[in-house]
Length: 115
Image: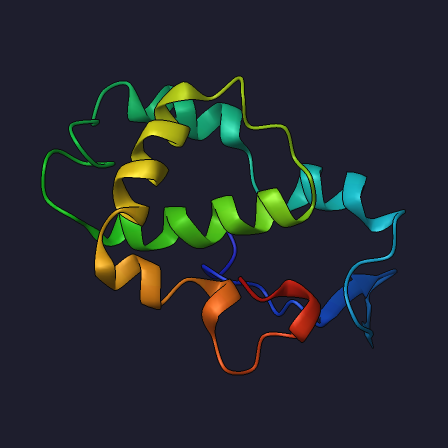
């Protein structure tokens, strides 16, 4: 799993970093494959889930989940097959700490991606 929030303005193509605003349309399939595997996470969560990823207290796993879901949504990854991930993400986004720290609410977020 990559860092919780990959650089939004940067994508990697053929081993070279290219700065650009937002992903090009052809980048989305690669992002879906390489950034995150929600299927594996959904399966792992079956043995650890409570209100959050690992029981009923916020953990490091939760701190990583919200940005991953935000990136998946940004790249239009269909998360409907992952009810556990969706439920946990919804619970976490109800917490003020996650609302104010969401990637789309940061000062350096491009205007077109702000919430």
